[in-house]
Image 1 (spheres, one colour):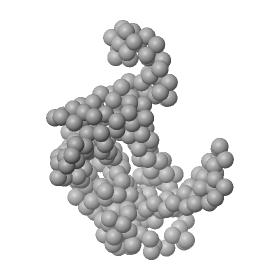
Image 2 (image 1 turned 90 degrees about the horizontal axis):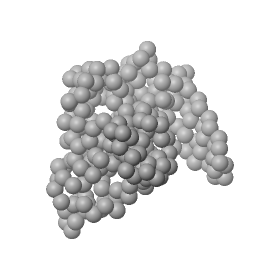
Image 3 (image 1 turned 90 degrees about the vertical axis):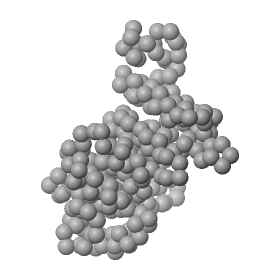
Image 4 (image 1 turned 180 degrees about the vertical axis):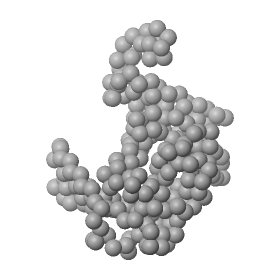
Length: 254
C-alpha cells in the first residue's frame, strides 16, 4: 500500500487530491481510495482493505501505516499478516529497534547486484521479537535492511521493519523479497502514472475527476502488463500504432 498526491489537482487553498492504492506483488493495482480533505491516508487504511479476503496475505506499508490499530485490524480482523517500516514517527519503537544487538544476528540474507557503474550490497538481518520487549501488536520478528551503494562514492541506507510473520513463516530471504516487493509500488505505479500519463500535470480538480482518471490510468497499466508489456511507454506506443484496434484488443473486445 502507498499513497500519492495528484499535484495538478490543487487549487488555491484546496489541497491536492490524495489517493491511497494497493498493488499486488505482480504489479497489478487492485483498489484505490481518495483520502477525505482534512485527513490523511491513515484514516483510509481499513476502508481500503476491508472488502477483500486477505486471509494469509502479507500487507506491506511505509512508516505512515506503522500504526497499532492497523496491525490489529490485519491480524485479528482480516487474518492477514503485516510488514511495516519503522521510522522516527514511531519514536520509541524506532529507538528500540536501533539499539537491538544486530551485530550478533545469525539470521541473515545477502544480495549483491552490479550494473551501469553501480554496485549494491543488501543485507537483511532478522531477530525474533520474543524477549526483546517490542511494544507493537503481534510483533514476531524485527528486521534491519541495510543497503550499501557504490557509484564512485559510497552511501548506506538502513531501514527497520516489524512483522507478525514468524521465523517459520518467513526466512530472511523471504522477508527480503517481501520488502523489495513493497518498494515496487512507488516505481511501478506512482512513478509510471506520472511519467507515462503525466498525471501530476493534469488539471482535473472538480468532483471525483482526479481519482476517476487515476483509476483509468491504473486500469490501463494493468491491461498492458497483463498482455506482457514490461515497458509501459513502449506498450503505449505499440498500442497507438493502431488506435482503433489495439486498445480494443487489450480489453478483449477485438
